[in-house]
Structure formats: C-alpha cells, structure tokens
Length: 473
Ligand SMILES: Cc1ncc(COP(=O)(O)O)c(C=O)c1O
Image 1 (cartoon, rainbow, N blue to C red):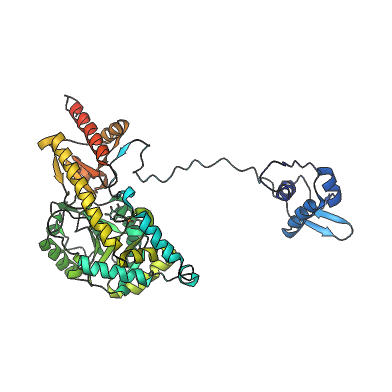
Image 2: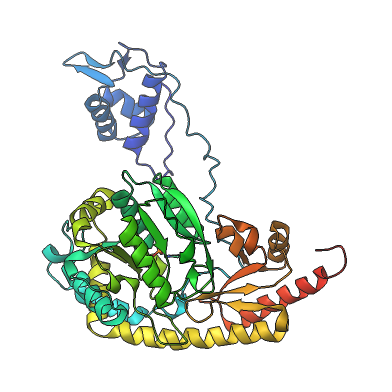
C-alpha cells in the first residue's frame, strides 16, 4: 500500500492517512476483501505513531469503508468502490452576479442610491450594539419572530406616524431585509389571480426584475415632472397593484402633488388595486414643505415600504413593510418562509438608536450635508453646461437627473467615459420604454466627495465638447 504523507501540510496526519486509504478504496486500487496491514505494521512503515494508524482505521470503519474481524485484521469492505472520484476540479468560471454598479478602483462612480458611507455614525452604533450585547442571551440570541422585534416595530411606527403621516399600529409593521425583500413579500402577497402590475416608467431596473420574477405582468406608465401620469391609468385592467415612488420618483426625481395622489387613490378604490408606496429616500428633502406619505390618506389600500439603506447604510439590510390589516398575517408568514426573521442584534441596536433620539439627529445632520452637496453638484452642472442642461429631481434624495436636450447617450458613450475614469448611468437603462430618456444621465452624489464630483463632471464636459465635432453624434 503506497501512501504519501506530508508532515508540513496543514491537514493532520490522521486525516491524510484516512483520506489516502479512502481514495484507494474508492478508485478500486484496494479491492474489496483485501486485507489492510496491521496498525502496528502500518505505523512502522510510515514512521507515524500507532495511534494515528488506529484512528485512521477507526474513521474508515465508522464510515463503512473497511470491516474488522477480530483476530484476523482489517479488510476492505464490499460495495465501497466508486471510481472516478477525482481530484478537486478547477474553480468554476462563474463571474460575480453583475449588478451593473461596480467599477474598477479609481473610477469616479456616480452610482445612485448610496449614502455617504463615511458619515455612518459608527461610534454611536457601536455604543448601541454594546448595550444590546449586555442584555440576557435569551433576549438577543434565540430564534425570534418573523415580523421583527417589537421594540423596533414600535420605534418605526412612532417615526412614520409622526414624520411621514403614515397611519398604522406596530402590529402592521414587518421588518424586512431592505426594500428588496419587502417587494418580494409584496409580490407573494398580492400576485394571485390578478397578475397585472402598473408601474412607473422609468423605475429601478431591479424592482421590475423582481416583480417579473414573481410572474407579475408589467404595465409601464410614463412619468413627467409631477411623477406618475395618473391620466394614463388603465381603466380596463384591474391590476394587483400600482408601484409608485411619490415622494421622489426614481430615477426622474418628481414629487407627486396632492391632486395626482388623490387620483391614484381613487383609481385604487375603483379598480380594487393596492398601491405600493416605495418611500426609499423621502427623509432627504431640500426644498418646499415635506409632503406626507400617500399611506395616511387611505391606509387600507396602501402598502408602505421604508428602508434604512439610504439614511444609514445599505449593508445593514434593514427595511420595513407597513401592511393593511387584512394582509398582516400572510405577510408575516411570507417573511417567515423567506428567512425566518432579520438578524436580532442590529434590530435592537436600531431600535435604541431611534428611541434615544440619535436617528432624528443623524437625519438632520445628513440632510444639511446632502443639501450642500446637492447645491454643489447643481452649481457645477450649471457652470460647466449652462443652458445645455436641464436639472431634474434635485429637490430631494441622493441623486438627480441631468438632461441634455438633443443628445443621445449610447452604450459606446458610457464605455468611453469609463475609460476616462468616470462611471455614469443612463436613465434609459431603468426604462421599459427607453426612447424618451436617451438624453438623460442619472447622477448619484450621496457617496462622492465634491472634488470627485467636479472632476467627473469636467471630464463629462470635455467628452461632450469633443463629441460636438461634426459626425461624432
Ligand atoms: C426605488 C428604490 N427603492 C428602494 C431602494 C433600496 O433598496 P434596499 O432597501 O433593498 O436597499 C432602491 C435602491 O437603490 C431604489 O432605487
């Protein structure tokens, strides 16, 4: 029996010896019925301790590779041959799932929707986590309930009732892994006999893709400077739900006025559709009075989705659903089937963060921070492009849209910009009907510092000037 042991290897000698014999049995080198050397003999020939040999034989015996007959020795068992169990294959050529937002290091990335990660309140968060970890283990480390911790649901409920004019009880709140999981739960809840979904166009590509993956049939409805064009709502349709971002349309940035909100609510009542209100970045409003959520106007027909991805960090994966009462039980059940419940320590840390007033202070600070950054990017756009550019949707959120009438931004343009070290995004990429959005760039500024914003926009200006030469458009 030829066995090679590597005394420098990380794997213990027992594991190596067991593995080598196991391989030889599987590939048939050691045939069924063959007698293995006595442990003492094997130990001597390999210059290992007898205990190592005995332990390896014990493992093989426990797994059925060998049989032991008292007095006569250890034999290869019948039925343990399985040739072709090869070496570890080379790693599969699977690329990471391409979400379309990564860029090589050093590239100025105008990715929308990421908050300023450097402003995350790490010290306070750590203090909250420390407080939570001091609680009895039974309260923080056990299996918990799908709807999420009562402390956090209460804190969220107090916040949305006071600040967003939402009308709800904590029992209606389900804590989710961000908006993304909330939408999955909504689809499972609402896509039954009705499978039609009216959706703003453009809207985040990812949201469309999730709804379609649940079998939802998308009916795009155009948006304008006041959000969803409610006069286009299809009367013949009876959709399961209408998906809308009334506080800050994504990506075009409109804030929906009350008249359209009421038309939307009337449509929901007429058609029996639910309204799914994605309130992803309403906390950051820089101009005009804050409009409350759609939810408060007709709580029984609106499913409200909130997230902490924009106000704190997308890596926390913490968001919430506020469900009309008849949907609560089923909603909790879908959350349970999806992932049992959100991680508990972060839920409790966040509940404390809100209860102790840190959240509102953080929002105030971040609002001032983003307002300043918004002012800078708007000023830079005006300085560099003058009346060549229309700026849309800059009154709220972490992104705006720059429209360059008469231009068409092609894939080739975006690739060329990336070679110049700037990653830009097309509004058209989020549109079901891209035709009318070819002249619009989506500029996320939440996680970019002002120097990079200026440098990125200067390179854009250079490229656009170069492209103005005849034949290059
Ligand atoms: C319209 C919209 N809603 C919600 C989100 C946030 O998703 P999540 O809460 O899953 O991080 C995004 C992310 O960019 C978004 O664009």
